[in-house]
Length: 231
Image (cartoon, rainbow, N blue to C red; front, side):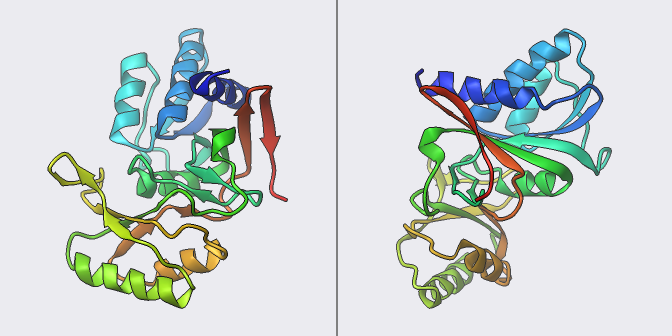
Protein backbone atom coordinates (compact mmCIF):
# COMPACT_ATOMS: atom_id res chain seq x y z
CA UNK A 1 0.00 0.00 0.00
CA UNK A 2 1.12 3.55 -0.67
CA UNK A 3 0.79 6.32 1.93
CA UNK A 4 -2.75 7.28 0.95
CA UNK A 5 -3.92 3.67 0.91
CA UNK A 6 -2.60 3.22 4.44
CA UNK A 7 -4.52 6.28 5.59
CA UNK A 8 -7.67 4.94 3.99
CA UNK A 9 -7.17 1.58 5.69
CA UNK A 10 -6.80 3.18 9.12
CA UNK A 11 -9.93 5.26 8.47
CA UNK A 12 -11.87 2.16 7.41
CA UNK A 13 -11.07 0.39 10.67
CA UNK A 14 -11.95 3.48 12.73
CA UNK A 15 -15.29 3.71 10.97
CA UNK A 16 -16.19 0.30 12.39
CA UNK A 17 -16.33 1.95 15.82
CA UNK A 18 -18.89 4.55 14.71
CA UNK A 19 -22.42 3.59 15.72
CA UNK A 20 -25.78 4.94 14.62
CA UNK A 21 -26.79 8.03 16.60
CA UNK A 22 -23.30 8.94 17.74
CA UNK A 23 -22.15 12.44 18.53
CA UNK A 24 -18.85 12.46 16.72
CA UNK A 25 -15.79 14.68 16.91
CA UNK A 26 -14.19 14.85 13.47
CA UNK A 27 -10.48 15.58 13.23
CA UNK A 28 -8.30 17.58 10.89
CA UNK A 29 -5.57 16.51 8.47
CA UNK A 30 -5.00 14.24 5.50
CA UNK A 31 -5.83 11.02 7.38
CA UNK A 32 -8.92 12.57 8.96
CA UNK A 33 -10.00 13.69 5.48
CA UNK A 34 -10.07 10.04 4.39
CA UNK A 35 -12.23 9.23 7.40
CA UNK A 36 -14.65 12.03 6.45
CA UNK A 37 -14.97 10.66 2.91
CA UNK A 38 -15.75 7.17 4.16
CA UNK A 39 -18.12 8.51 6.81
CA UNK A 40 -19.99 10.49 4.16
CA UNK A 41 -20.62 7.28 2.20
CA UNK A 42 -22.14 5.68 5.31
CA UNK A 43 -24.26 8.76 5.96
CA UNK A 44 -25.54 8.61 2.39
CA UNK A 45 -26.50 4.98 3.06
CA UNK A 46 -28.51 5.95 6.14
CA UNK A 47 -26.08 6.18 9.08
CA UNK A 48 -27.27 8.82 11.54
CA UNK A 49 -24.51 10.84 13.19
CA UNK A 50 -23.96 14.41 14.31
CA UNK A 51 -20.45 15.69 13.76
CA UNK A 52 -18.45 18.42 15.46
CA UNK A 53 -15.51 19.49 13.25
CA UNK A 54 -12.14 20.46 14.71
CA UNK A 55 -11.39 23.06 12.04
CA UNK A 56 -12.96 25.20 9.37
CA UNK A 57 -11.20 23.00 6.80
CA UNK A 58 -12.91 19.88 8.14
CA UNK A 59 -16.23 21.69 8.36
CA UNK A 60 -16.04 22.62 4.68
CA UNK A 61 -15.27 19.05 3.64
CA UNK A 62 -18.10 17.65 5.78
CA UNK A 63 -20.61 20.12 4.36
CA UNK A 64 -19.42 19.42 0.82
CA UNK A 65 -19.91 15.66 1.31
CA UNK A 66 -23.16 15.82 3.29
CA UNK A 67 -22.00 14.94 6.81
CA UNK A 68 -24.37 16.71 9.26
CA UNK A 69 -22.64 19.12 11.62
CA UNK A 70 -23.32 20.80 14.93
CA UNK A 71 -21.25 23.20 17.00
CA UNK A 72 -19.59 22.03 20.19
CA UNK A 73 -21.91 24.38 22.10
CA UNK A 74 -24.85 22.49 20.62
CA UNK A 75 -23.22 19.13 21.42
CA UNK A 76 -20.96 19.81 24.42
CA UNK A 77 -20.49 16.12 25.20
CA UNK A 78 -19.38 13.70 22.49
CA UNK A 79 -19.28 9.93 22.22
CA UNK A 80 -16.19 9.59 20.07
CA UNK A 81 -13.52 11.66 18.33
CA UNK A 82 -11.56 10.26 15.39
CA UNK A 83 -8.44 12.23 14.53
CA UNK A 84 -4.95 11.82 13.13
CA UNK A 85 -1.59 12.56 14.73
CA UNK A 86 1.81 13.78 13.65
CA UNK A 87 3.49 11.41 16.12
CA UNK A 88 2.32 8.70 18.51
CA UNK A 89 4.47 6.81 21.00
CA UNK A 90 3.96 3.51 22.78
CA UNK A 91 2.12 5.18 25.67
CA UNK A 92 -0.31 6.81 23.20
CA UNK A 93 1.13 10.25 23.85
CA UNK A 94 0.77 12.37 20.73
CA UNK A 95 2.16 15.37 18.92
CA UNK A 96 -0.60 17.07 16.96
CA UNK A 97 -1.00 20.44 15.28
CA UNK A 98 0.92 20.14 12.05
CA UNK A 99 -2.18 21.45 10.33
CA UNK A 100 -2.64 24.22 12.88
CA UNK A 101 -5.88 22.97 14.48
CA UNK A 102 -4.43 21.78 17.81
CA UNK A 103 -6.53 24.02 20.07
CA UNK A 104 -9.88 22.95 18.64
CA UNK A 105 -8.66 19.37 18.32
CA UNK A 106 -7.79 19.27 22.01
CA UNK A 107 -11.06 20.87 23.10
CA UNK A 108 -13.09 18.42 21.03
CA UNK A 109 -11.05 15.41 22.18
CA UNK A 110 -11.48 16.50 25.80
CA UNK A 111 -15.24 16.63 25.31
CA UNK A 112 -15.32 13.02 24.07
CA UNK A 113 -15.71 9.76 25.96
CA UNK A 114 -13.22 8.15 23.59
CA UNK A 115 -10.57 9.32 21.14
CA UNK A 116 -9.36 7.05 18.35
CA UNK A 117 -6.14 8.05 16.61
CA UNK A 118 -5.73 7.01 12.98
CA UNK A 119 -2.28 7.07 11.41
CA UNK A 120 0.17 5.22 9.22
CA UNK A 121 3.28 3.46 10.51
CA UNK A 122 5.52 6.46 9.78
CA UNK A 123 3.87 8.34 12.67
CA UNK A 124 4.81 5.77 15.33
CA UNK A 125 7.92 6.76 17.31
CA UNK A 126 9.78 5.47 20.35
CA UNK A 127 10.08 8.98 21.80
CA UNK A 128 8.17 12.09 20.76
CA UNK A 129 9.96 15.06 19.27
CA UNK A 130 11.26 14.31 15.81
CA UNK A 131 8.22 16.20 14.49
CA UNK A 132 8.43 19.87 15.56
CA UNK A 133 6.11 20.62 18.47
CA UNK A 134 3.44 23.22 17.59
CA UNK A 135 2.80 25.78 20.32
CA UNK A 136 -0.17 28.07 19.75
CA UNK A 137 0.44 31.53 21.15
CA UNK A 138 -1.35 34.83 21.60
CA UNK A 139 -0.30 37.55 19.18
CA UNK A 140 0.32 39.95 22.09
CA UNK A 141 3.81 39.66 23.56
CA UNK A 142 5.02 37.00 21.16
CA UNK A 143 8.71 37.65 21.81
CA UNK A 144 8.19 37.50 25.57
CA UNK A 145 6.37 34.21 25.15
CA UNK A 146 9.15 32.82 22.98
CA UNK A 147 11.78 33.73 25.58
CA UNK A 148 9.72 31.99 28.27
CA UNK A 149 9.45 28.85 26.11
CA UNK A 150 13.21 28.90 25.49
CA UNK A 151 13.94 29.23 29.22
CA UNK A 152 11.59 26.39 30.03
CA UNK A 153 13.14 24.21 27.35
CA UNK A 154 16.60 24.87 28.78
CA UNK A 155 15.48 23.83 32.27
CA UNK A 156 14.21 20.55 30.82
CA UNK A 157 17.40 19.93 28.85
CA UNK A 158 15.79 20.68 25.49
CA UNK A 159 17.30 22.76 22.72
CA UNK A 160 16.61 23.58 19.12
CA UNK A 161 15.12 26.38 17.05
CA UNK A 162 11.72 27.78 17.94
CA UNK A 163 10.38 29.08 14.65
CA UNK A 164 7.31 31.21 13.96
CA UNK A 165 5.12 29.39 11.46
CA UNK A 166 4.60 31.28 8.20
CA UNK A 167 1.88 31.19 5.58
CA UNK A 168 2.76 32.80 2.27
CA UNK A 169 4.37 36.15 3.03
CA UNK A 170 2.88 36.48 6.50
CA UNK A 171 2.33 34.70 9.78
CA UNK A 172 0.20 31.58 9.92
CA UNK A 173 -3.05 32.32 11.76
CA UNK A 174 -5.16 29.61 13.38
CA UNK A 175 -8.94 29.40 13.22
CA UNK A 176 -8.92 31.04 16.66
CA UNK A 177 -6.86 34.00 15.45
CA UNK A 178 -3.62 32.95 17.13
CA UNK A 179 -0.13 32.19 15.82
CA UNK A 180 2.10 29.13 16.16
CA UNK A 181 5.69 28.58 17.18
CA UNK A 182 7.11 25.28 15.93
CA UNK A 183 9.68 24.00 18.42
CA UNK A 184 12.39 21.81 16.90
CA UNK A 185 13.40 20.15 20.15
CA UNK A 186 14.24 16.75 18.76
CA UNK A 187 13.84 14.01 21.35
CA UNK A 188 11.49 14.95 24.26
CA UNK A 189 12.29 12.53 27.11
CA UNK A 190 9.55 13.81 29.47
CA UNK A 191 6.63 14.97 27.35
CA UNK A 192 4.31 15.14 30.36
CA UNK A 193 6.57 17.57 32.23
CA UNK A 194 6.92 19.75 29.15
CA UNK A 195 3.16 19.75 28.58
CA UNK A 196 2.43 20.74 32.18
CA UNK A 197 4.98 23.54 32.27
CA UNK A 198 4.07 24.98 28.87
CA UNK A 199 0.56 25.44 30.25
CA UNK A 200 2.00 27.76 32.92
CA UNK A 201 3.31 30.29 30.38
CA UNK A 202 0.69 33.07 30.07
CA UNK A 203 1.19 33.68 26.35
CA UNK A 204 0.80 30.01 25.43
CA UNK A 205 -2.77 29.35 24.35
CA UNK A 206 -2.25 25.61 23.82
CA UNK A 207 0.38 23.12 22.70
CA UNK A 208 0.41 20.03 20.54
CA UNK A 209 1.25 17.50 23.25
CA UNK A 210 -1.80 15.29 23.79
CA UNK A 211 -1.11 13.29 26.95
CA UNK A 212 -3.48 10.59 28.26
CA UNK A 213 -6.16 11.53 25.76
CA UNK A 214 -6.14 8.75 23.14
CA UNK A 215 -8.07 5.57 23.95
CA UNK A 216 -6.23 3.61 21.28
CA UNK A 217 -4.65 4.09 17.87
CA UNK A 218 -5.28 2.35 14.58
CA UNK A 219 -1.98 2.13 12.76
CA UNK A 220 -1.91 1.12 9.10
CA UNK A 221 1.13 -0.34 7.40
CA UNK A 222 1.94 -2.27 4.21
CA UNK A 223 0.56 -5.47 5.74
CA UNK A 224 -2.71 -3.91 6.97
CA UNK A 225 -3.92 -2.21 10.14
CA UNK A 226 -3.16 -2.94 13.78
CA UNK A 227 -4.51 -1.55 17.03
CA UNK A 228 -2.01 0.16 19.30
CA UNK A 229 -2.87 0.35 23.00
CA UNK A 230 -0.89 2.05 25.75
CA UNK A 231 1.98 -0.09 27.02
